[in-house]
Image: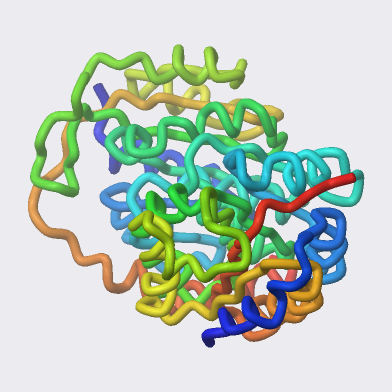
Length: 181
Length: 189
């Protein structure tokens, strides 16, 4: 699913509010967040998540740990979000293959695109690490979406819910650095 | 030094309704000993993640005790897991590591440092109950108590290298086993 065309529709709105994303995460029934810190989402998402009493944040050492923990949680019918930077997403590819893709487990990735130009597709980036993210997700057959502004946030909860209801991985890319009041 | 299969036979006599997470060589040996056990969970495909799967299961099912049967080569591929477990402090979690100094599943090559003190590393990572066991009699005498301890518990088992050569993981990793595991959990096993 390529919904990166949403970028064009949302370029006129310049803000992506972290609290709105956190509300969407909770609305999807997510109660665990597994994360390695990412400067891109640090202030706007990770600190608010860490302070939210309805979410349990588990800070891990490397991104592939998240796959195992989320898998185990899913067998207990607990929903988790994996919040990582795109570099960590690249690091964790073998675990993504084995745990998320081959086992068709519900895995919700929220991937910060550090240094992505706000409002633009990462495919247009000068940085190869950003350009390859969407093609890799497509290769795995993982549905993806990208958030550039508040207008995109209403798609978050349905995407996360669908991953758990139909047992498949999904990825939400954070195209602009979220802000937190 | 102990024989892994003998350790697992002793463990099998003590296990009741725990979730057992196993991987690679230990996994195939455990499956051979407990082929019909529905609460076996085999860490699939990405070497090193058994303890992470176990941590998720321990959090997802706090009413169940989770036993992880890891390997030393596997643990080294995910060494940070000890720090994560040390931070989370799952009370229903016990982590055994078969320490034979060898990537047995990958041809028997040595791990980078065979004398690594895994129990010391676990303690340093925040897992206070970390033990090393080198004799089968000692293991037999302590296993009941270890399984009853409040977690997290870490146990480094000093074992001999097992038989080398290709192992058949197809049964262990069959989707039907994961389906049966989920069904058993949901049935309240």
